[in-house]
Image 1 (cartoon, protein in one colour):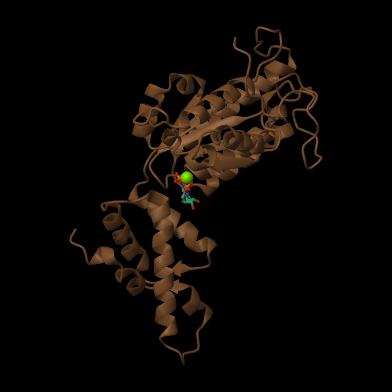
Image 2 (tube, rainbow, N blue to C red):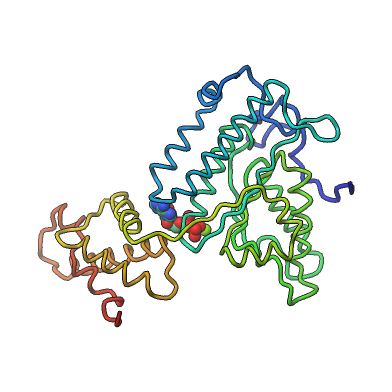
Length: 333
Ligand SMILES: Nc1ncnc2c1ncn2[C@@H]1O[C@H](COP(=O)(O)OP(=O)(O)O)[C@@H](O)[C@H]1O
Ligand SMILES: [Mg+2]
């Protein structure tokens, strides 16, 4: 095996405590494994880690996404069992007799606004609870954060990002932009090579999640088999159906202390049906943007009536006219 060219500090066993002075959760464990404990049953691990709280919150907070939620439960189960195995000395051993961390690098594919970033943040918490992430934080980046414009700029940039992400999750959005086959000398390749080494050699201290459109990611993996082989979990995020979008919208409104007045829910459903059929529809993100515009129209409507005393009800209620003024109702369907 090649000697690692890149080793990001703050990763290996015996590393100093975190910047914030907290003791790493994995401290004292064998390399790569979570801290050993006396737990012998699944429920003991669950009680010890409180991981179910995070999983249940995720399931309650997010509308739909049944297949994604199931995959998250499966991954959590795998990690709980891995912990129990480690407690009995059954951890998978590397060639050097050391316990190896299970490979946790993931790929989240789906269209914009399907919840990939949101789920990645929760995944970072789950990994932290289970002791597979020292800090539980997530650093979200795109190509521009990793790749430099000039020769010699890429390696320091990529290493700086990796340093920040160590002990947590590195989320690379639209990861396929790292690879530009049309440009032989593209610096993205350099970033990919550094990432590959760190993903392999320091996987006990860094989880990488790649995200983006399914078809582009597939093409990227075909040209980058090294990356493909290091991704253990592929999770596909389906588009939301209109009833799900409607429910997401209602939750968002509730969170902002607004509500739909008489007839407004039906109009918003009609809006979503039309909007979904248009270009650049971005699932839950489009719902959020639509609600922002509807709130603007509500504000203008109330503003126009300068002398009226406004009740709490006036201030929280969105009426059909606030929605019907949208451009999508002017377009032919
Ligand atoms: N299933 C869901 N339930 C509730 N809100 C959601 C759901 N999926 C996405 N959202 C919200 O939609 C917005 C976009 O989601 P995000 O995770 O950024 O999508 P992506 O990363 O796939 O583009 C966020 O405000 C998020 O909270
Ligand atoms: Mg995102």
